[in-house]
Image (cartoon, rainbow, N blue to C red):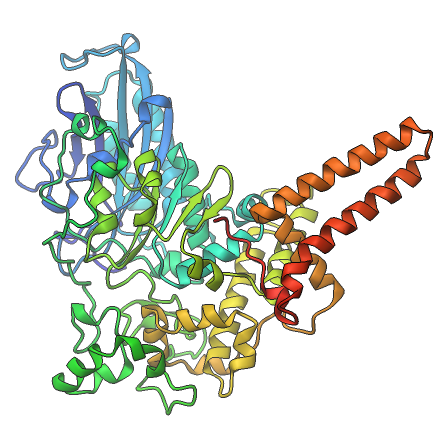
Length: 603
């Protein structure tokens, strides 16, 4: 297991930290083992500058509204040889009068504290399961000076997790794609495509455990992402001018007053610990394979041709500039990516999405709000519970309302880009049907294969493998059309595609190109398209409600005049068919492409 700390820790767990809420100082670190600052004691409040937001991440905004909660968060590395630090925090709130030993700084009726684990490995669910037990025991003591249990937790975790691999089901513990599909239905594929396009995606819901659960479950659909794809996802520097006083932030009357969009952050993004050959920070959005071989003069010329970037990848290219080596056995396993710097499998996965300034923040504290408009952050997948984030829609490309299962996208062109094709709708419908039909099955825990969690992840792996394989083929326009021509065009100029395409992955030769659900259109496809349109567009919802009203009216009228129920239902069906015809008319004008016209993304 690789080292990921300044002092080369003995195990995967770096620190156990207790964060409390002080009535005058706000959120602050009260205990850390080993000390967060090497020259300080266990009870020091001091923090490394890179981790200044730790208290606000561990004790989330609005925590006083809940008796307990769980937070997943990411911290920046502390050194050049360090990777992302993964945090899990268990929050509790108890009445002060219940304490056996009441310290002098406890002046309120309730006590709010969080116990955190800072780890080098993204075993969120496993860490949470262990931490919840210890946090419960710690609070049951009703004496927060009893810290021996926390030191024992540190030793136990490092002893039990040392040597653990990031392969297998333990990485996905607590993440349920099955529940995600049941809740978001076909919109899960829209979220998948949004992240492939490296857009600014903000998840919003409260409490935090629902937020981080939904966000991380979406990421778990990307093969290899949880295991190896997040190591560079938190490379940012805190902003020195951000106020640490929560009262100042809460006193802001309007969301637009909190952060100026025109404000330019002078802090530069900390470069990843593993950079590509001859790369620089200016390459992150313009990575052309030729950059690795061209002279500096040619590189500068290439950077000035942003408008021609789609043409940088000729549909009939020569042999890619580098060849990704396979493991010694030729099967399975991971190796270090030559350009991405990530540990990759033989297919070049995970895709290097969360690199070069594209951040992953499962939970984002209000004090980090400036990162949404930071010029060194090219995009993000972030979670928030504060309404200020949701109100400032212009800072995100998409806002995901987890509670209502809505995806809000304001930009019309992006909505068109994300329109699900008929093949995509078939794929999504296939997932939804298998999950829904097995809903009352004996495999409700998601361990069953078909319709279970592992099965869902396997379907998304197949989807991505097929997309990548299609992109490698010559004369591939028809193959890629099933994924959506606008989507593919936008994806081909992303950083993750450029890096992946700049390597040759021999194992891809075994993958059959073409959409898994390609095929001729049928009447069933038309019904599927109309069904999704009715369910997910504003106009469709209005028509659907009107159809229901018409149906009820016809039935009631039939009963009133003695008409048979069967005749009334026939009339209702006729009325519904009329409404469907009305819905289909605008799309039919654009025939034969009308099946691609309707959007499922909420405006």
